[in-house]
Length: 391
Image 1 (cartoon, rainbow, N blue to C red):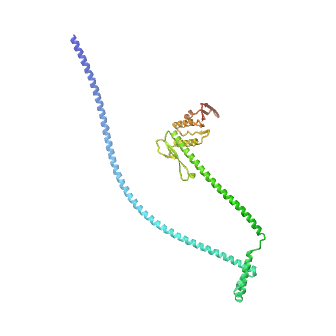
Image 2: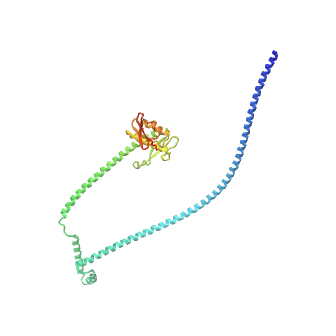
Image 3: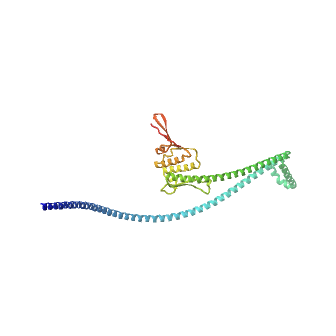
C-alpha cells in the first residue's frame, strides 16, 4: 500500500507537471497565433503601402513629364519675351533719341520766341515813349508859342532857310526855359523840413538799433532755449528708453524693446520709432505686432514715461481690455509694486485685476433704472471701478 501510495503521489506530481507544461504550451501556441495574425496584418499593410507607393511613383513620373513639358514651354516663352524686350528696348532708345531731339528743337524755338517777345516789348516801349514825347512837344508848342505843331512843321524848312541863327536862339531859349521850369518854385520851408527830416532820421536810426539789438538778444535766447531743450530731451529720451525696456521685459516676462530716432542728425525735427521684440521673436516695428502685444507695448511705454515723471495719482480706464489673463496678472503685479509711491484708480472688467485691488467699487442695477454703488475695502492703494449694468 505504501508503495502504491508513493506511486500514486509520483503519478499525481507527474500529472501536475504535465498539466503545467500543457498550459505553457497552450499559452505559447496562443501567443504564436497572435503573432502570426499580427504578421499577416502587417503583410497586408505593407502590400497596401507598396501599392500606394507604386501609384504615387507613377503619378510623380507623370508629373515630372508634365513639368518637363511646361519647362520647355516656359523656356520658349522666355526666349520670346527676351526677344520682345530687346525689340522694345531698341524702340524705347529710338523714341528717347527722337524725344531728346524734339526737346532740343522746342527749347531753341522757345528761346527764339522769348527773344522776339522781348524785342517786341522793347519796340512797344520805345514807341510809347516817342508818342509821349511827341504829345509833350505838341502841348509845349501850343503853351509856349500859341501855335499848332502842324503849322510849325509846315514852316520848319522855310524858317531854317530864312534865318537859321534865329532858330538856334529859339532852341537855346527853350532849353533855358525848360531848365527853369524843371527847378520849380523856391520852397521857403525847405530848411525847416530838412531839420524835421533829420530828427525823424535820428529817431528811426535809434529805433532800428534797438530792433537789431532785440533781434540779436532774441536769437541768443532762442539758441539757449534750443540747447537746453535738446539736453532735456536727450536726458528724458535716455531715461524713458531705459524705463521702457525694463517695463517691457517685466510685462512680457522677457524680450527687448527700445525707442529709436528716425533722424539722429536733426533731433528737433526727428520722429520716434518703437522697436519691440517679445520673447521668441526678432526685433521688429511695433506696427507688426498683434493687438495684445501692441496694447502691452503701449502700456510699457506709458509706464516708462510715468516713471520718469511720476504723479501722486494715476487713472487707468480699461487698459487691460485687450490682454489675456497672464498679461493682466503681470500688469496687476507691476501696478501693485508701483502703488507704494502712486495711488492708482483703475476702471476694469477683469476679475484677475479686481483680485489685486485694495478697494473695489461696483455699480449695479438691482432694479430697472436704479443704480447702486457697492464698495469693498481690502486695504492698500489700488482702487478699481467695475461697471456692470443689467437689462
